Image 1 (cartoon, rainbow, N blue to C red):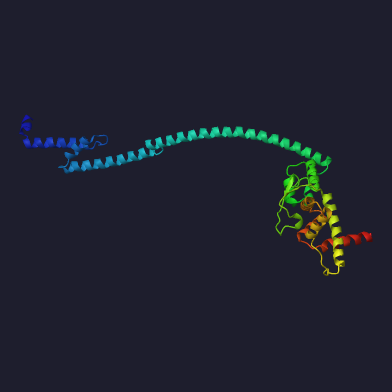
Image 2 (cartoon, rainbow, N blue to C red):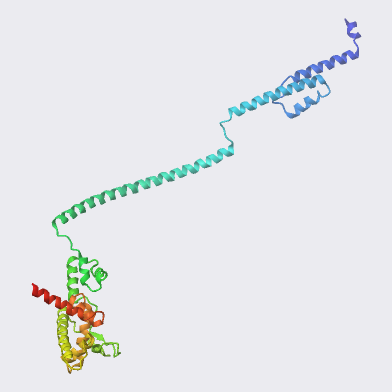
Length: 328
């Protein structure tokens, strides 16, 4: 036996050693590379580059490791698909904190709104009770008190019409409106009521003769009755004057002096030596006509005096009135 061992050649010994190394390498290559360092893997692979058998074993090992690594990666993805990245988590956390603050602010606003709502609800209930009370009171007054008159019916007899009446009556009680109406009728609310003197209109030819003066004229504050009586006398005197003129031989047919010119003659006859009185009565007559022109007779006289109407209107009106009285 010793002879056999001694008879083995060095070549055989080298071959056995190489086989042992290959078997060791194959066993190492059959162990997974997963979990190994890159230096270890590179060293293992460098030892098999010259040996096709070892290279084949290494490639098979790498394929198995790749498949295992892919399986593990897929498992990790499946296990962690419900998780988010840290940056996304921090962003969501910040958004959550902001929403919490906003929610708290909204809750506080809601509490404030609820308090305000309760206050408004109480105020509304109070107003409803107040409304019901006043409605009942109004119905009681409506059933027991006389209705308010339609005061706008007074507007036609007031100088300035409806617009002026609204200015006078705004915010006034019924008693005050009665006082205003009476004052309007007697001229108490007229703009000339507090005027002491009238300013003369001058001596221009366009000014009627009975008003031509540059002096200040005293305001006599004629009432409506005074103006009506004066106008009635002027008409009476003018009719007589026109008849006298028609009876003269040199009078023109159907010729009548104008009312404005006759008023001048009338005052000269009434106050022959009192020029100041003539002017005073003339200015007060004009002012009275302006104030009480809503009266039928005064309105006709004023229109004829201004030349806006013909004198025949007055004569026909009185002729119609006389016929009506005779028929009755």
